[in-house]
Image (cartoon, rainbow, N blue to C red; front, top):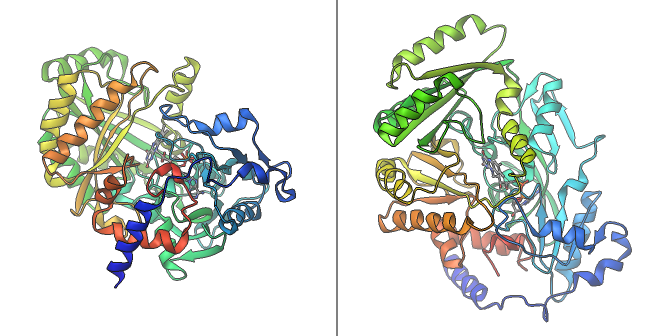
Length: 510
Ligand code: FAD
């Protein structure tokens, strides 16, 4: 019966006409609504800013932008849309660091979540409970700074910390900590969510659990998350941060997989691909000693593609005596090219915030606000060698246009909860692969074409690769993306956002 319901829902969805200016409700009609006085604006500077994102490849204009000062403002707005005969689209916008208009609301209202940030409230830390209650408009760097004041820290991170809590929880939130702690969505104890009906609910694993798991990785489809309770641990003081270079992909992945299988091992593990495109560093980090650049580059020239294993071990006063010994043991056990190991000893916060320097550097050169045709994938472990051969050593070398960071590192399925909305591969271990490209306004399409080529290669080879931070141009793509989870995704949409109001920029429902 439930299968039939989903089919009916699906067909209805396909038949629902795309909202046009003629039939759409008029968000501008509510501009004069007293509830939103001074908060809702159609000023061109506001709507223009809300129309673009970090990707700089889309421009999707809303009719208005809401700058809420309270949760009630957001409830009022969603209710207004839900109760009206013809609803208008609404999208929460965190820090707008999507790549493809995911936080946009064409002809609707973008909710500028950052206007909720208020120094006096929004982050409450419980030392005894080891958690922080956080308004989701805060950036992860802001939460880190607050919790560190009490010697505590969240455990799971993204590489870059200037993203909102709500934005990353709507996707997953992954980094080198994911193999040990799980993604950020596995480290949340409770949420407050305003559904597409304008109803607010507190949810957790025990209360309203369906909504809780729907919202985690839910691409903003089921509600606007306004509060998250995030797990904390005692903060370490420093990190040993190491890189090992490999010329052999199977040695590289074998070492990565062994290290993530060790339960009490490293706190962070990533990896990247290095190609012959000038100095070994890239915008994301300046790491290698300049005196070694030449020998690294000549190794890349010789092998054309080499790999870098990147790990970190945290420590503090109590563990500082053993950490060097552990690092030494680790180095001995790995099959990297001898002589190509690099080590840094940095503060915990400098380690977590390592991408910031690169950002500021690019900003100073006017190279931050440029097109970013990124592609992020989850590749099953059984397919990663084929991927290396066909993509890194195939498509990428052949086209010879990809520069920027190219990440490849494994994570364990067991650290994810099946009920969460993020789609991940079936295998116990899968790899996150990220093509973090920077382009020019007149050449980004070449990179996008290469992305399509990579996706087609994976599809033709039936590799069961799934996009992370996904973009699909058609609903058919989304059905394939979610696979067996699609029915649940549709059922949840009808349960929590039956009028299809929320986050239309994801392009999943019309
Ligand atoms: P936005 O782009 O504003 O929104 C993203 C989506 O979430 C939209 O659909 C929006 O409607 C919805 N949304 C936003 N807030 C809420 C809310 N409160 N409730 C419900 N829905 C909401 N990701 C990783 O996992 N790991 C990384 O290491 C990583 N590094 C990155 C580095 C850079 C430089 C950039 C630009 C992005 C990176 N990302 C990474 C991707 C990032 O996590 C996502 O793009 C994330 O969505 C950005 O957060 P945001 O606050 O800018 O969200």
